[in-house]
Length: 310
Image (tube, rainbow, N blue to C red; front, side, top):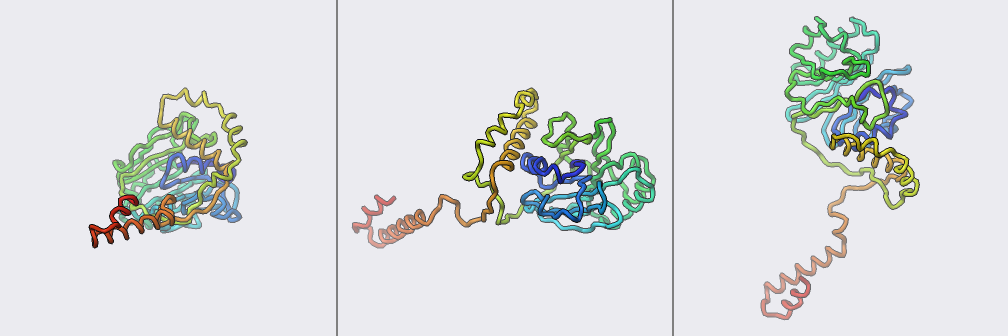
């Protein structure tokens, strides 16, 4: 989860983050998108996008779900900045992504919680939100409408020491490996909010799909790519002792450099791997035919030919 403060001018960083982490779901608040920007312009490759945009500047929520994970939108209310998507896992989980513009009014929060309660019913859900901590904490209405909900994030998510970006769920034990990236090592552009990452214990039935865009490395501008990599201050990043974060950074840099200097092409999922060409299949067919002939006439001269063919 990430408070982007506009993803329109940070698309390369967004795509680099997706590649480096291999996330199934990306949740973004303050997307700053509008009806003038199409989903295809901002969607990471291989993801479905569910979003709620404002007609004016600022705000907005953006939820990207990998096409390998079955999902469907349950609701996106026009009156509040909320997107509700069901992830068809075993069992299914509902993701609610909300943004509450400051200052948060009690009537707005009441409408938000009652809407979530009406949509999710008795199903498991995860509520992701931004700028709502002060209103949520101790709110009597939340206790009525969203019983048994737990705050998972307990450390500051903002540079001023506030917990403004939240992960809430009825089953905190299902949230694993939660990390608030407060050390400035994230591949995202500098922001006053820290990115949050976590995994969930659910079982996902991953589906396959075709027509995936891939890099056409044969047409890459490797002179410009090399210059780009030489301009990066690598030494400052190798000072960290966290190998996983260093690997994440290296992967994101490589991907972002490819986005800049290597064009894309559309590939199609195929029945056979690239090396299994028609010529290879023809040779294998000949060997199978020879084996059938040898099986029928073991003493024939075909056995010698088969030995050479094998």
